[in-house]
Image 1 (tube, rainbow, N blue to C red):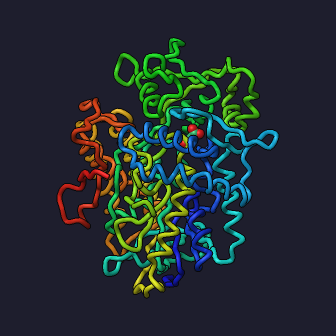
Image 2 (spheres, rainbow, N blue to C red):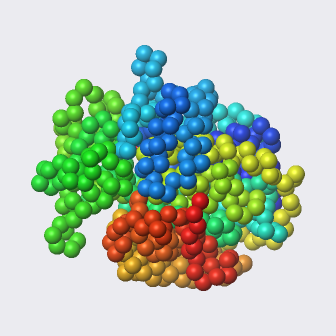
Image 3 (tube, rainbow, N blue to C red):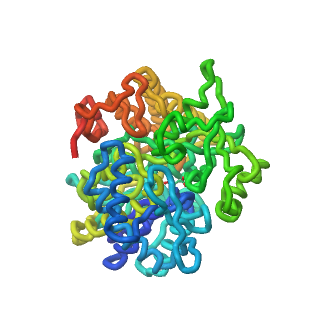
Length: 545
Ligand code: SIN
C-alpha cells in the first residue's frame, strides 16, 4: 500500500537532538518524529557517563571551552564550541525543569570528571544511566504535546528533492503491521537527527539501531558530509569472548580506575601526563598498542583495575555496569576487568552551519548525525548529550526561520518494495558482517594507505552485492535491514575515502604511514560529496572553517 501525507515538520530520529528539536517545533506546528524502533531505543538511551556542562558562570564556561578545543586536536570550530558551552547551562536547566533527575546529594548536583576535563563537571543520572534519564524525560515531555506524533518502527528509505530542495521523505513501515506501507510525507522542513553509525564496525559500543541511516540519506540526496575520517573509539569496552562490546564508562576512570597491561604495569605513565584521564584518542591507541602481542594477531589482555578505589560504593555508583559484569562473574571492586577499544562516536557527519542547516536547502541535521565542527578531530567526553540539546534547539530555530509556508505536494507513484526471502535475508547478514569486519580490520584505530585501499575494495564488493540483492529500482526488494545495509555501506565509503585523503595523523584519525600532525596542509575539514550527485571523480576536498 502507498499513501501520502503532509506535516509541518518532519524529524528523523528520537534521540536527544530529535526530541529537543521536536519540543521547540511543536510550539509552531505539527511535528512527526520518525524512529526505527520504539522512542526509547536510541543511542542516547545507552549513554552512561553523563552530560558535561559548566554551570558555575563565565570562568567555568571558558574552561569548558578550552577543554573542548584542546581535546579536538586543532580542528574544533571555535564558534560551534562557544555555542555549545555557553548555551549548555540554559539547556540543561530547562531539561531539569522538564523532569530530568540528575544525581544529587543534599540538594547539590553531583559532578564527576572524565578524560581531558580539567575539573569535575559531568552530571549523571541513576549512576551510569544518564542517557536513559534524558531520553525518558524528554520523550515524556514531548508526548504531552498534542502537536507531536511519533511514527515508531518506521524506516526512512529516501529523501525527496524537488528543485534543489528537500520537500519530503519516504517512510517504510514493515514491522508490527499486517501490511507493508510505504508513505511519502511532505514537510515544510526536514531534520535528520538519526544518530551515529557504530554498526559500521564489527566492534562497537553502539546499539543495533546505529547504522548511519540519516547520514547516508543526506549524502544520497546530495548534501555534503564533513570530517568522516574522525571516528572515535572508546578506550574501554568489555573484552570477553562471546560478550558484546559493552561500554565501560569513562566515569570509571574518573572515579579512580587505572589501566594495566598483561604484565600488571600501569602503562599510561608512558603515554600521557594525564594518565588514564588523557584525551580519549590517546588512551584508546595506548590500549591498542599494549594489547598487541609480538606475533601478528597475538592479543594481550589489558585490564581496568578498580580494586584499590576507596570511599565509593561502586555498585551504587555504577549499578548498570555492575549488573552487566555480574552476569559474567565479574565485580568492579574485586576483579580486573578485561577491556579493549570499540567504535563509539562519529565526529563527522552531515555538514551543517551553526544552526543545523545542511548544504541542501530544506534539510537540517543535529546531534551525532551532524558535523558542525564542534568536536574537531576528537570529542571531549560527555559533550555529546549536551551537543544534542544545544544544536537540536538551534536547528529547530532555523527550521522555523527558513521553512516553506506550507509543504509541497510530492508526487506519489510508489510501489512498496517486496520483502526479502529467508535466503536473501541470510545473504544480507553475510554481506553486513563482511563489511563490519573489513571496517574494523582496515579503518580502525591504526590505518594506512594499504589497509584503507583494502577497505575500499571490500566496501565496493559489499555495495555491488547489495545492488544485486535489492533488484532494480521500481521492482525491487526492500526492508529495514536492507536500508540499513545500504546506509552502512555508504557511510563506510565516506569514512574510507576521507581517511585515505587525510595524509596526516590528528585526533582519532591515526595513519601509520603519516604518524605526525601536519598543520601546514591539514588544518582543514574534509568534505565528502557522493560522486553520483556531484559529478566529479574525487569525492573528498578540504576546507578551512
Ligand atoms: C562514557 O560513559 O564513557 C561515554 C561518555 C561519552 O561518550 O561521552
